[in-house]
Amino acid sequence: MTKYIFITGGVVSSLGKGIIGASLGKLLRARGFSVAIQKFDPYINVDPGTMSPFQHGEVFVTDDGAETDLDLGHYERFIDTNFSQLSSVTSGSVYQTVINKERRGDYLGGTVQVIPHITNEIKSRIIKAQKSFKPDFQIIEIGGTIGDIEGLPFIESVRQFKTEVGIGNAINIHCTLLPYLPTSGELKTKPSQHSVSQLRSYGLQPEILVCRTSKPIPKTEKDKLALFCSVSKEAVIECRDMKSIYEVPLALEEQKFAEVVLKLLHVEDKKVNLDGWKDLVERINHPKDTIKIAIAGKYTKLSDAYISVVESIKHAGYSNNVKTEIKWINSEECIDSNKCKELMSDIDGVIVPGGFGARGIEGKLNVIKYARENNLPFLGICLGMQCAVIEYARNVAGLKNANSTEFDENSSTPVIDLMLEQKNVKGYGGTMRLGAYDCHLKKGTKAQEVYGTSKISERHRHRYEVNTDFIETLKKAGLVFSGMSPDNMLSEIVEIPNLDWFVACQFHPEFKSRPERPHPLFKGLIDTVVKRKLSEG
Image 1 (cartoon, one colour):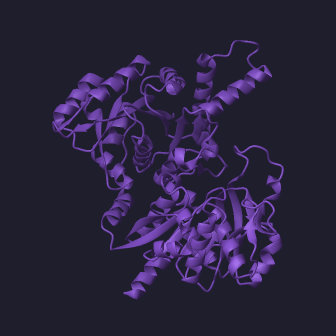
Image 2 (image 1 turned 90 degrees about the horizontal axis):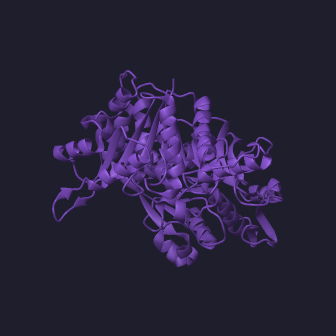
Image 3 (image 1 turned 45 degrees about the vertical axis):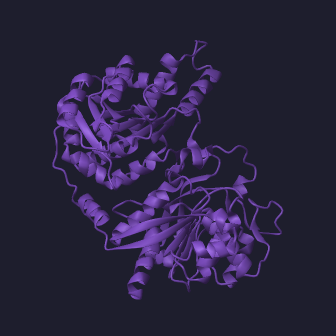
């Protein structure tokens, strides 16, 4: 029988509930249990696909084409499991389903209300995921903070669900913040007590308290939290700030976090194997060298906009036992070629990631031109590949007016154009080419070499593609199309063979990278950088 673990947050937002949930999932997986995770987001958007990256950070994409919250990326990376659209639930999607049912007459003319209709729909999403994944443990994170009005239907659903499955089959882990007052030198427990009191007023009593803190929690304060929050002393778990998020599972294991969870859920503990993860953390904390990789994009003021890219760079660095320092380059600053040269003078490699719109494009083209002309290891992703094709077309293939119809609808040389199936699409939400698609790799190319196979599957999120009318011209000019769709119509990977590492892909490789298993394209980039540094002495 599946056991359910609900994670709520209090005091402040951005506490790291996703990392705590992912870490618990890792600890359970390390014991041989199967784990599924869901993220319930209270916002009214149907999904985060139309949200600005400045507001919400990265949009993570699953194999089945769901545009989801970035926490799903943490879940997949920590637990090393591919999740699906069932793992991402928003108020918008719940209300949309209920309203559609009402319009069809499914409720037989009855009054549609938050209780029971919305809460029943929320609970049905838990059951659907359970039936699909059939896990030993299902972890459900409720987004937002206790007290948020928009989160109330989810909290009520959790209360009902816990009652329905019975004691010992579901628990609530409540994550709170213990603020430190330097003037008095104290960690304060009162905000956590108030947060638990608020949770109780909704009918939920947490079984475990996970306390985010910058300082060790004294025993007296742990005892106070246990007493006033009505949890056992062993169930007050300290989650201190770490240098790396990958240290969190080990820190929680030291406090017997998973053991407490298993005990509450009446499941016998198993032998844990975290050897590989410990080796990973050892490499993170004791790198042999440091390299500097630039990310040149237009959302650089919020690193969460590229969080999977950042983590994928780090994963490839860990495998080489090097620390990867990220240099953020705002592509708009690179419109001036001299400024671009200055910004890129101290880096070992560069990535131009995905994005939308014309802003900063000329700067990205200058970044790519510099990388190509100076044999600087380069990886282009999605829009980054499209820009690489435009730059090559203009400056090598002699197509001076080469552009994308995304930036210039009337371009005379549209080397990048809207995909055929996108021509009649109306609306922005969930209408792109989304999810996993197969790709065939050309023998003898760098892409085929790093993947070690001739057929791959990667996740996409785009509307524009390389215009097939210009492929032969670009090939004659030396650009290699090393990855193509099975029907040979869509360009998936391009590369320049005479450079050490100049590879660009239409898909998003960052969504499939794992801490202990870095993605081949990121590893290819970092391997090249490390090899060059070694040869330079």
